[in-house]
Length: 406
Image 1 (cartoon, one colour):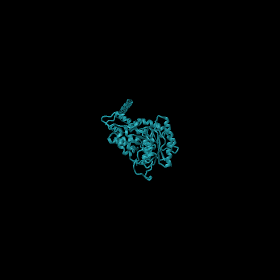
Image 2: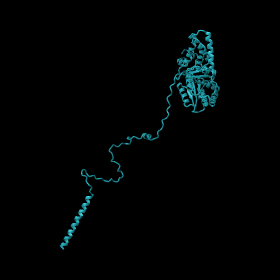
Image 3: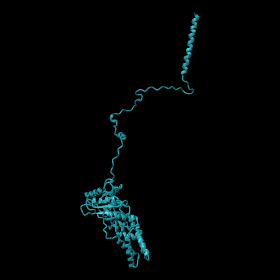
Image 4: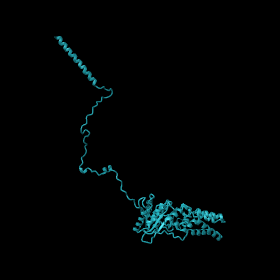
């Protein structure tokens, strides 16, 4: 009996010992290995977020009343709203200029004219001063005149008269030759022409001046400069921008007008030139202006349809009253080609006067003689530079003096 009890006790003890060893072994396997040189880090899994977890503790700051809180002033809305274009602000008015008086303009520009025409005047005087004026010398004189665009008929006429007068005169001092040449050139230029630009209608309506010419002759610029000439002489001017086919032609003319206080009547680009010309005269009558200047589109003289349209502009304008002046603008550097242009324009409209531009840029001043002979109308204005007041009334005496005394 005692032996059995002892055996049971021993068995229980053995089971307990074995159980302890197993438990001890499991606990050791669950422990993480320790690093020899660092403190073990225990990582805690993140907790599930709860409502309000993102809010921090309230900050301690003084509380403000509603009066102290600034209300929105709309700047934030402006920042996010679509951009609105600034309203168009009218440009400041152009300062009105006082043009230079027209009296004596050509005399003031005489030195410039003399430099450009040196070949004609000096060449003729040099040839005429030769001791023996034989046939070869007279041929050289003819060539000089033809090269200067005087034209065949006027050249032959001038040479014949010079030969006769030199033969009769006998002696030929420099002063005598200069006086002789001056007389003959003035005879060709015809001092009996009335060269005043007609700007008075004789009625209760403004004088109407139409400016015509081919592209590139400086027609719009000449119209603007003519406005300065008239304003300088105390006339009030309305400009009609009937050149609707060339880009910015109306803007260019309006700029010229604003400089001297002249109003410009204009229409849409590509509009009817005759309608704009009609409105310009109508406005000139309403305003009581002295002169209406109408700038027409540059016509290519080879295009019959465009030339017919120019005739239409003339007819429409004349519904208000007579057209007082039709000025043909020619580029002096085109020479004899300018005469072809002049003939065609003369067939469409009654040319009453000629404006020669760029006369300072050519030695071919004989075009003045040739174009007058061709059309039977006077050169009334000449352009001698790029300046706003470089358009001068043509004065034959001053012109000839510049040729032979420059």
